[in-house]
Image (cartoon, rainbow, N blue to C red):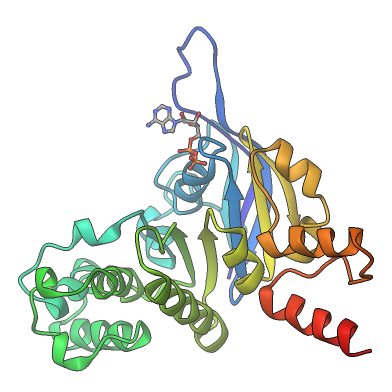
Amino acid sequence: MKLELKGVSYIYDPLASKVKKAVDDVSLTIEKGQFVGLVGHTGSGKSTLAQLLNGLVKPTAGQVLLDGQDVHAKGFPLKTLRQRVGLVFQYPEYQLFEENVLKDVCFGPKNLGLPRAEQIEKAKKALRLVGMEENLYDNSPFDLSGGERRRAAIAGVLAMEPDILVLDEPTAGLDPAGRDEILSQIARLCKEEGIGVVLISHSMEDVAAYTERMLVMDHGKLCFDDAPREVFRHVEELESMGLSAPQVTYIVRKLNERGFALPDDLLTVEEAKDAILKAIMK
Ligand code: ADP
């Protein structure tokens, strides 16, 4: 399974006096099993790109290809694309509406026209994947904690068994423990279930710690598509786009200015800790 954008542009208002491309000539490929981070300043085009990936909006120019097939060609079942590329919007828990968690997660499989027993089977599997305790299945979504509600909403998309999951800021508004829990569960989905993940994030720390590939958007253009360790070598360029490197890389720089000789590509606190200990034990 391969999802490809080929020279894709998107304009919200083609009749505006000054036409602005929300996404500008972007080409990229997303495959199963890969954990991809998508970053960029507010307004850089991340959400529009996410909607292009699952066919919610149609490119003004260029093509979206699923296994080589143009998803906007006449006769292509867009429903197939939406099932195979799941999109989790920001604050997805606002869309929970059924009387209990299990029913809510069944909604997607039910819409796919699956028999009741299969709906329940898929919903339960999705709830297990997000680590939801079984004794909460009968609860109203409104009786859950913030983190649980978020996980129930993500399960709702997972129950459709997508090959690729696009998540728009899935940790927004959660406390640090809730954030780590969700991110490790997403990482597990990628590794153990082979689902491709595109994670839109404001946190350079999260992208550095969890993803293997990083896409950077600026003014609708895809400016970087590389391993985080490579992308974060370009600190000045990232800063000119209103972004930054993970905090710890700035600390490492300062230490090196004061005589340390630490590697210049340390991205996580853990890596920096090990390198600093090694340097001072020498
Ligand atoms: P991001 O997710 O990175 O914040 P968006 O994809 O939301 O970026 O926005 C990209 C550009 O498209 C911005 O200039 C934004 O103002 C514009 N835009 C987004 N949604 C709409 C919309 N519904 N109507 C008109 N312009 C929009």
